[in-house]
Image (cartoon, rainbow, N blue to C red; front, side):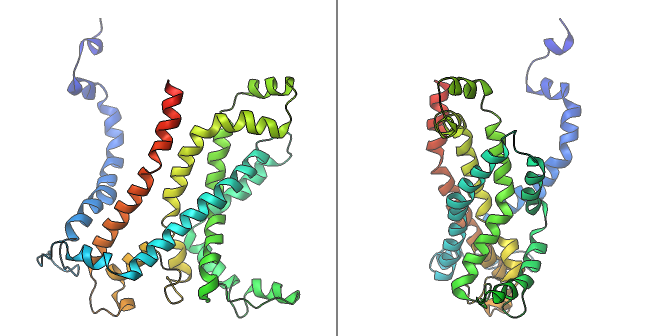
Length: 311
């Protein structure tokens, strides 16, 4: 028996794989610095009235949480964040599934090119997309309004109108995240055995019947995972909004991330003389807990599907 087999215990296994852990160390350090520590610090700072200068000393207990919870602007921003996720689930997910089914057809010519074109927005910097689209959608002189003017429509103030700004940004965000959801669906479709399609065709099933009775039952467990990932990723369109409307006009496009940003780093927008890091941290904690609770509501779906599969 080799020495590696004779070793037992956690310490021995770590020693056996020490080089693996060494290569993981940079990632773990970065994760601790930029993800784990900010999460812990947010909970700590939320109990202080702190402007970010020096060490926090003015302990206020739960007062920041009370102030955030009683602020209607915060709940309005939370509602807008939730609406972005709702649009992603109701519009982006089924639409990307439809395109994935089309692009998964091996008889479709140029499908690799179509996949690339649909995925390009995902890898394009959101700030660049926001700046470019802000110019294109400008109410005076924007390309979009010039084209609409040729057919006698408009002009529309896409990003400057309270009624149109939020729907416009939702369309942009749906287009921006469409490609990644498409890739998820394509990966899910690859898990369907071709033998099932062949058996269905032998039994006389058409294309729609194959989709309904073969494809959908097989990919449902993965679809639930896609639902959770899409929900979480779409709750925070901060970069797009900050690059276009900065939460305006009149806070109609404000989301929780921009609400937190103003109090933490841009107090002038709120008429404050100094940042309120403690207040912003409390808002972040409430938003994080609420997002976690909404995500956990989807856990029974995962347990139900995978539990049945395991049995």
